Structures are given as C-alpha cells and as structure tokens.
Image (tube, rainbow over all chains, first blue to last red; front, side, top):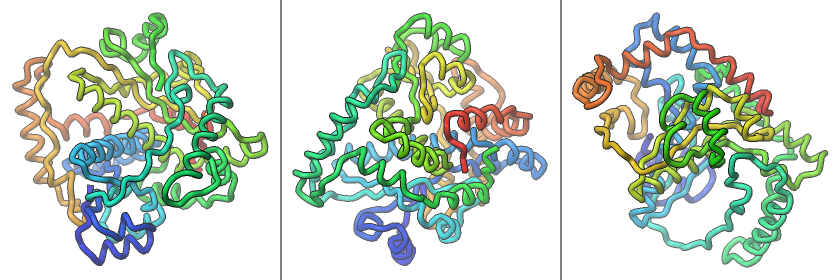
Length: 200
Length: 200
C-alpha cells in the first residue's frame, strides 16, 4: 500500500488516471502486488533462483490475489466506519510512470487506486448479477442466456432511472461494445514482463 | 462460486487438495475467476473478437482481482458471524480435474477453495509483517532488510511457542527454501492458456 500525500504527485496521478476520486478530496492509496519483500533476506545466488520461480504466471496470480484480499479488507474496513470508497482501475494507464514516481521495485506492480473519504452523495445501488450466474452447486452451468437477459433488463431500467448520468444501455451491450473493440492491451504484458513476471 | 455439496465430489477433491479443511466438516466453496459470463449474450462473431481481447494478461489480472475481492467479502462476512474460515490454495494441484468435475467453461479458472465452519480450535494469531514493509508514504522503500530481520525473529518465537506444530523456522527461511527449489510451475501457464488466457 502506498499512501499518496504529496500534492504534486497526486496532481500528476490525476492527470493520467481520470476522475475526481484521484484528484479530489479524501485519502488516496495505490495498492500493489508485491513479491519483492520475500527476497529481502536472500543472498544474490538465492535471489537469482527465486526470480526464476517468481517470474511464473502462477506467482503472478498469487501476487494479484493477495493484493486484492488486502484491498477488500481496507474497503470493508472503511465502509464499516461510514466512509465512502472508490476502487480505481485507471492507474493501469500510467504504469511506467508509477514505477518512477513511486520508486517501485522489481516484482511490485500497481493493481488499483483506492480512494477513501466522507461521502457527499448516496448513489443508488446498481443491480447485481442474478445469483444463478454467480453461485452454482457442484457444477458450473454455462446456459445463462436467460438470466443475463433478465439482468440486462434490470440494468436498462437502472440506467434510465438513476439520478445522475442517465443513459440507454445495459450490461451485455456495454461489455460487448468494449470487448469487440481493438483494445491495445499488449502494453500490460510488456510492463509486467519488465517487472520480472515473464509469465512462463 | 461453486458450492461443493456432493460427498463423492468432495472426497475426490480432498484426495487431490490436501487437508481436513477440504475433506472434513463445514461448507466448501471453490472460488473461480470468471470472464465467461460477459460472453453469454454475444453473437458468435462478437465472441471471436471478445476472446482475442480477453486472452490478454491484462484481463487475466482483472479476473483474478475481481474473484479475490469476492472471496474476501465472503471471508469477512463469515468471520463477522463468528464462523471460522480457511482459504485453500491447494486446489491448484487439481486444475484439469476441476475443469471436468465442475464443468468449468473457457475463461473460468479456479482460484482458491474456501471452507467455512464452526471453529473447534482457536489458533494463536500469527505475527504480521511490520507496517514499515506494508505501508509506504509516496515512495516504495526497498531497503527493508532490518525490518524483515526483526519479523523473522518474531516468527521464530511464534513457531517455537505456538501450541500445535512447533518448529524451528522463520518467514524468510521458509520462503527462500521454497522459492530456490526447482518448482514445476509450467503446468499453470499451460492450464490458463488452454482456458483461453494466452497472456499476450
């Protein structure tokens, strides 16, 4: 966890990772996956061997998983105190810069920004995916067209009726639109490889 | 989330993913990263384009992150009710079998087992990493040899004095020992590639 208290640093971050949550009030954390720490006590020879193992996609998964558990701990802790929170994926648009600005070591990868503050609005609860596509007993069931169609109708209603930023949209349409575009995602693999995760 | 209520399935799982938490009492979930659902409403042409994007390491990270947030929600919810929980990484040793046993679709990857039950023991709290290597202000500080050495001394004491499974060990020694071995980790990349995550 890196707490961003330097106003210049916060301004630089806000210019890259959009939105009031980064540039505005409240406290801003950057949550990182971190497999650097476990090398602190290792000899140079041990480190070389460790790097070969840590570079695997298995340890990348482990590192992301652990950082996300910590993030959700922080999130629920803040909410339990009546604070409002935002998880900010947009830090991914400034990864090489974050390395430099935050002095991040090898095997330390920013996962998400996390802003905490006193909420000044109470947005409506977004509908959740129906339980039938979230929980399964013993067997995953890929036949979920009907459940998703129902959820899309719920989301259409939500987008139409919510207080701010009303729109004509639904869940599938938004994701299918995003995911059928030509997304330039190679930057991410390049970045994590440079940080040590060769993903072998 | 897949709840395992079939006793035969649970026996098969316990034989592969070691330990009483899998084979014993309480309720067992398998938490999965799932990017299959968002394709449910897509046309075959759209699906082909979506697969190309979803196969990236960026979306693999996103899927793992989201599943882990849900896992920690479940974990803290259970603990808030006075239940005991175990997160079980050992499901990774049975990935191809889990695909078959649980009927997992493309882009659905088991992350962790999660057992919930009424605790019949109160193990001592394991010491946590010192705050100086977990939280940083504005800049990550890789100079953490002293803090880790102190933590290793705390862990030695903990391992020596705890009620069950006393041992002579510390944190660095355990991880360095594990991570300098010849770990066969290629299986993981092979598996997630087969499920659609080419990690480009």
